[in-house]
Image (cartoon, rainbow over all chains, first blue to last red; front, side):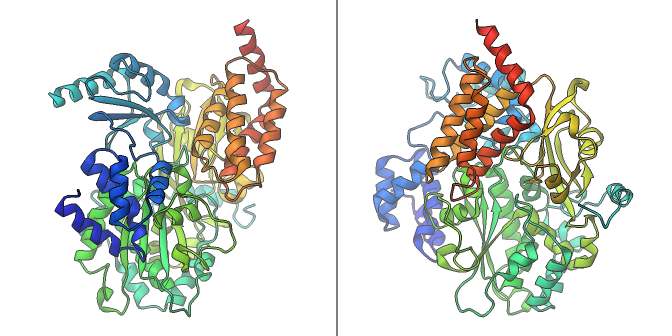
Length: 158
Length: 434
């Protein structure tokens, strides 16, 4: 299931740790990059690859919030609502996104373009309010800036 | 308190503009620029010393951990067994997840080579051949930046086999987390590196005896390690004279919340909290009054806005006013903010992040959140504050790791220090709903 390149990476990752299990989180990242999310099938595959019990892999995947156990939209919007962002208006950001995208926190748009999530502190308190979209941070947000970003994402997706 | 250094001496230190961790040099993150300013010469110097002498220098500097607990770094290093055939490990904590903390990412972005150099010196001092840098999963950009720096340092022979022609060999690997605040706790961090759920371990045994895979391990924060090359270059004694004597050096203070210029400010320890807020962070937005300051990340006991005059930012000074330096993340909250809302949000965080191992924390954080949510929505009475203190007291000290205390302290101390304000909010909220 993994590409040749990813299989090579798995072997390299295993060598970094005294036991192959150490590579589990990193191998799950490779899996999420290649398959988009971590399905039951993927967990079985990773378990066999690292010779770990399936239950252990499930335990790890379900512990960490960043492994997606369901498919997410092309743009996974993750808004920080923790203290520093809250003080500077993250509620307005969430409200605006919900209105603009027509979905609530935890939902994906019918065209599968956007998933909206609320997340805990992302370490951007000095540039609050902020959100992460896929791998990138967008900081010092305003409603105006949000609208431009959403337009931009929609344009990119076409 | 800082009896051996007068306040005028500390003041003069403030004006020195000493940037040990984040020097104001363009492109310092590039290895050629770093080297042109003397980068990696501390590693050369360390390699010419005995490992014991390197550790001794760090001890002399009085460097204390920058991850929250302010434990003496040199002393921690001496806990590692010297005569052993077992592998030993260094884990560098870049999990930076405490709300209000955003300093370590500045190092990963602007000064990654000083971090790498510090890691190598630490490994040499403790006889370690493998170091892991644990970076929180969300920091994708900063993981890539550090990986680039590591690759460049390998290419120049600073990392790898027989470093700079010596007999010292070390590898550095990045271990990417996947979203779990608890993994910033050192034993949970080790579990996570081992490929498990991030459940904190019962201590003792401590990591230096039983760490990663049961082998001797030391865990240090990114900022702590980044100070090490400076100490080796300039000497422990030189370093020990900067800032507050019992907690020397500079700190990366992250100032956030209702200030005009939020950001990370590198300043000597012992700087006045009011200077940090008004002189550096540009004062409070809209010239409002400060209602509350959380001085070291969201779990630290808050200070009343009318009591910030004269408070100095170092471990001992903050202890003397009933708080703690934590990660140096200063959250400023203005007079128009509902404290119930602040407390509810902070508590929701600890409830969400509790790993679930210990009943007092798993259940207690949820109870506190529910009571606070109810209060902030106007369905409560002032006596509920006592209920909250009761729950907090039953969590504090009754859990495997410090997350329990981290959840209990904001509740307990905010109620203790802002009782009148909270009672007023409860009664005015409740009238609003009638």
